[in-house]
Length: 401
Image (cartoon, rainbow, N blue to C red):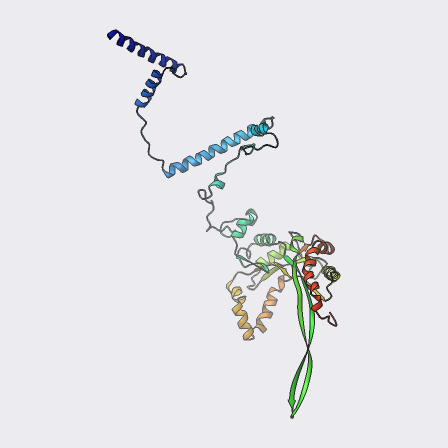
């Protein structure tokens, strides 16, 4: 019995040694005893101690470092891709063919990661909002600022009439005033308003009693009925930027633009005002005739009126002082009208602003001819007039349209 047990123990030792030799060679053990022995050893080994979870600061630091490493790896990979002459080949596309579908869809070149774009809340703006750059406080030139920073440093108002401002920077720096005019010199908004109407006449009879006699009086009452009214947009056909120019002086020579702005800045007038008037160059009479003839050809027999309302057609810069603000307040205008003080105030304002009135102009060109414009909008015009022509039988033809 002892000999049998000794031989069995010797066989187990030999099998374990053989399993250890095989494991050292990189192969799996073949015998079940070796596998159970190795599993027992692995279970018997103590586990690593548990670490506490990372803090918020550590997570943010790891995120930033990972993004920066991604940028560096992406830049190196892009340089290698550009230097390589071999074209990019998608393995999935090559296997599936041109009409196949691949689960892997991605760019052929690595994508650069931008920390500021991916985490805008973690990377705030470098410039505080309470800082307003100006040449008076910080010595900043208006030409060195971006359009966004330039307008952020001004106090201005934009309404249906255009841009207006009384900022102190524009009243003390001719370069800032020129930059403001150039930036606000955008195309005005122009529309083509078409109205079709006719006049209906009604006979009204009334009776009056005078000196005990009753008399019947007949008179005609005319009423204007609007058949259709629609608006066409002309703004997309206008050039985006206008041509700034100055009017001519009494001697026939045009005013110098820079000298005119410098004269405004240096003036001590408390009610001074400089304005740029925008104009849209087009043959408006030809447009009226083209639209009217097209509507008449569609079967509409009555009066057609074409007008051109315009918005955003001016740039105004006014003086920066308390007297100017009080003078232009609506309450002041109402009091002047009630007390008849306008008889003195309005002539005073006229002569105070006459120096720079009608001196600056900006012309905008329409890129479509009147006939081309009507042809492009012919379908819309025909649809608007079609309703009135279908019901034209209920309209009484006037004697004169």
